[in-house]
Length: 444
Image (cartoon, rainbow, N blue to C red):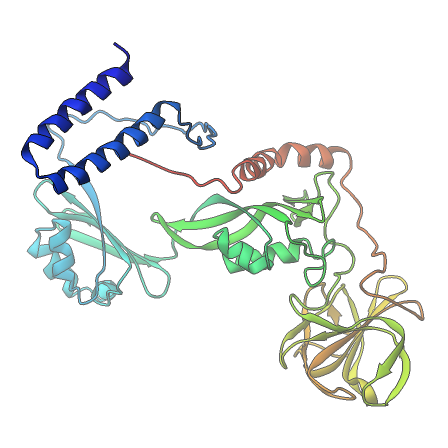
């Protein structure tokens, strides 16, 4: 008999039994529910459910070396507990299975182990014990960012505090711009420090004030430092991809034979141009380069030979290129102003500053990205902002559209080493792209 017939026959038998036990009104309600059940059940065999897209990712993992342990060898165990609010050392030791009053007594009188009695909630305390609960070793991250290490040798303990041995691993993230770079980075779980690096890495190709588009995408591989299995900060971006207005920009961190490092495109071309597009990391353009702009103070139309960036007083201003300080002084409408002379015919000017960086003086050398001053409202300014000018010889150019000179690409053996060296990072970027928007699920 077909499955539908068997189910119908079973349902009819159940309804007949229910009718003999219930009153008329009660039976009517059961009959309605029963008919609804038949209708719903009848649709089940032909109903198609949307399937979840699945992607299989296989990664080779190295297995730890297994060492056989003889029966006559005492067993040693590492255990870890999180410090809780109100914890005492004795309470944490009890949770860890430490049963060694003599060791605890010795450590109480050891000045170098004082950090043990300044327990901070949330930190991890690791101990090594044997089958009898004797304390054999201890590791604790201190408030000063160091690691307290205690090791047992017979009835004596060696106590020392040293910088943590960091284990650097790679982590990847990807996202899509919906409203702003920071909101997309937050949604992708990207730390703010890495987001700022991302904007800095691509600063020569993308103006993050005005070039971002809804639908732009990014993928990042960056360093994360671990100490005893805990995250202790992030490092540098290893590789990144940013798709802006459908154009893909790649960046790979590479260290040259001379020890210097920097970011390069997939073709081995340095990403750091001779000049940055903007003298500030994040701001808002209030007045662009123009041959005819109404001046708010002079009340007349005149050329505006630079770009104005609105920002709070005190916002750091960075040199867009390496060079020498031509002057740093007060000049009428410019207020506090700095002019830098760069390689060749290029020079830049930064005006309305609230003050100069301590190292800024005529003749001083500055590096690209170095802070040279701070946003202010000095001179002819109706509000706090930076006025920035870019010149080629004596001619002013629009900083937003001028063609910036590029650096020399890698050649020969350096290029070959670069291509081979970035392969692991390039694979990680491709994996981050493939997993963009995918939610990972895990199980036992």
